[in-house]
Image (cartoon, rainbow, N blue to C red; front, side, top):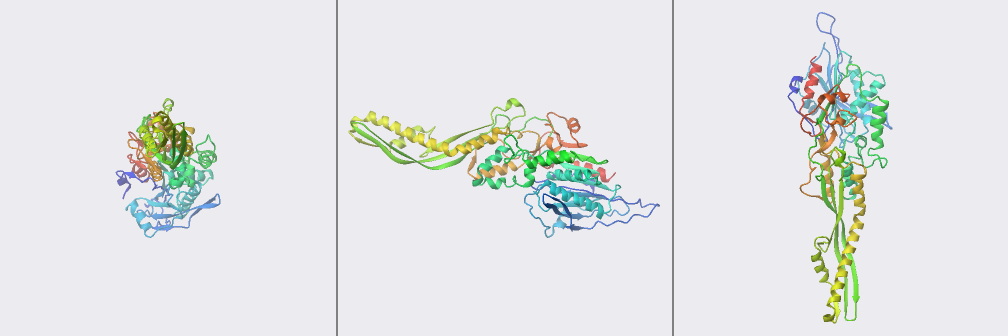
Length: 524
């Protein structure tokens, strides 16, 4: 497949399968009447497992590379494309599988006028610094192995987390004074300033960790996720939403010791976002519920023992009332304007005694308890007294049930309110410009598994904003109502591509950026 054919090829990847690429090029003589062509090492189809990155926090970056040759380039500048994958928590100690090299190269197509190196991490959710060290080692290996020079053409594409990994690799080489020879760097919907999952939903999953929530948060607790998430339920202090690992990566290293952004002479930097321009909210709108449902927090019984007597009669009851208490939760998305931040979340405890709701089914509950009250004595003379005593019995039973329900739900309520309000997070970015992911659905699924039942008619189901436009384009402040020219002016990327009308799923694009940029580089 030639680069020209890529122009018409849509680019769409799944949420947990992030592709990434890294490039290195070759050069040579002009093949004419001048000097004889320079003979260099050929690019052969193979899997290379001997490359290892520098040691970071006690362990080296590791992985392997599939080499997929393109057309013969003897005597001509060498075109190379290196592909590095993104976040892959399912990959732990990944090893090349049977037939993987063939299937990988087949996916690249045939007849390309460039060679492709497809990079696989050994651990797809490892520290970004560690995987970046491995990617840097791959670049250095390719330069040496294929005798690359500045006359060759190199394209490096990092997709999702791969965009941050490749950025770190390039910056570390530039900081060390090591030429990387990369002509084109493509960062595709990458969280250059972090990724977003509502901290409130994370807290809910943590709250129900003994009922299924822990599994949903296993991904969020991986090293790379702790680095990338701008809001994390294991944040450092009470006023900080990110983790110390996030600060170390983005603040201390990428924007601190490594200087902020790759800036080698001749490097073209391209940023791609799956989100749209502007700040007009999509669904849900302020005032709509983002999540609503109920979780059973207590099921048991409340003992009720009561005796009252006068001269004529005795009224008594001794029974265990069945009780079920549920925590009813609602959360509301926030707009982008401060005056829309009035209501974030609310909760209450719904208590049923013997199947009757204590708030809406009082008469039925009264009849249920009254039928179980014993009255003895001169019955004809104690009707008024018995009626008053029954009222007291019912009140005692209901008060005891409500108190027990609130006691059982108290820790849930406190954590819920903290999760959505104390950190000023709410569902701030649900309708904001940015690429969407299905992580919110994964959390919902875990909560449903834990017994949290969602109600119908609630917004926020389905995909959810994950990488904001400002993060994908490495803009320090929210994008606001910026047009394409303003976005480009505010971004360190030389060229930006984003959607004009609606947010797309994370790693989806309608811009055809890949064909435009790679074709221009390799056909120049």
